[in-house]
Length: 269
Image (cartoon, rainbow, N blue to C red):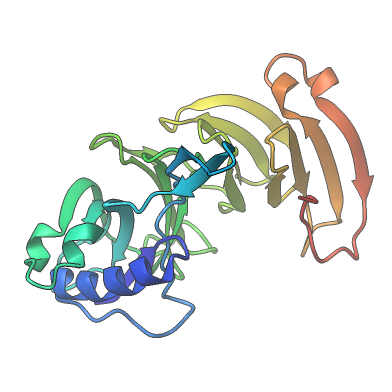
């Protein structure tokens, strides 16, 4: 079976976690970079101290533990799983520590019919995070969808909460993105495409309607939302003021444009 990890680019942590997860799950992690991504959610822990000139300096503290999300493919008639573990990095540095003591399972979701899984942590700067898991297969064995099979799950590191987020049987999940504050996410699914806002428990909070869109981008501060339709769509795009998006859509929609030749879509920092 194959295993997919998502962690932050803290290389020492990633390397140790990579090796320990292999031991813990007794599975080989594929080297194929299309399948292997290592990412622990970003969390900055800092403390202030006074320098000799009396100025306050911020020091980054080493973490004793990290969160780690793991996707494991089905094996020997067992279901595929997405699991959030708390990984005891400080203990891992002690070579005498038993691997089984390094990982504490917080939340897990089991499912069948998945060949791939994309793991998306929210962007909050706190220790605990929510996780979206997009499980997919290239072929829908039920024959209901030309696009294969997709399932969207929501997990939380705060407790053992998991939920399946409803996706329309028509069309496919085009895109999904966390708001930078991590309390809501936006998804585009259905056919014709529908833009929906969901809360941190996966419940539908607001629908923006059906538009030919397949891409979502939030500005870094979370104030603006951009939705565009590219690839096999006509290049239409809409800009929203997110704070007004659920109260008054006439105020929320800031502008509209079209560019069918555009290939890259990012907000400036």
